[in-house]
Length: 156
Image (cartoon, rainbow, N blue to C red; front, side):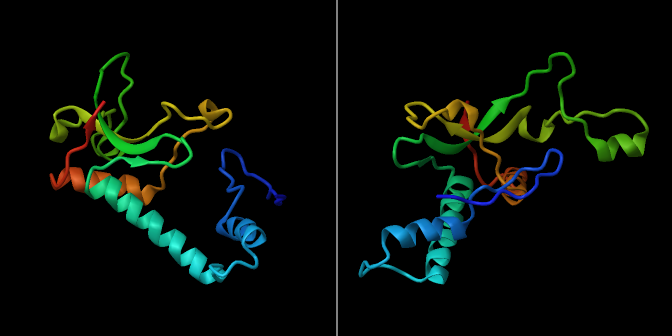
């Protein structure tokens, strides 16, 4: 499948494949099938599935096992290790106080939370070169759920 690459800005991620590209591949493979759906229905199903999968991962603290031996997705909690001041800077508080203040995550007993793609048993070519970068909406959702003490995640 060929696709056009747009010019990339400095440190900007480029979406190489969009839902339009995926639909074109689907259409070329299932063009005359009786189960073929139009592009809007295809898009709605994909969006619904992705939202439901993220809801399951975020709100139910479940692990999503990916098909075709691509690993699994989940949220893990990790104990913070204070080594060589590699803590995240709290820029808002630092600006107010005029000195550098770090996030210590006292509200979570020193744990931080992150999305984790378990690649054990993954058979994708060059899978070590890939990483998971969730969108901001889902990072904020983790924060909200943790602050409201609605869910607890896997310990890494």
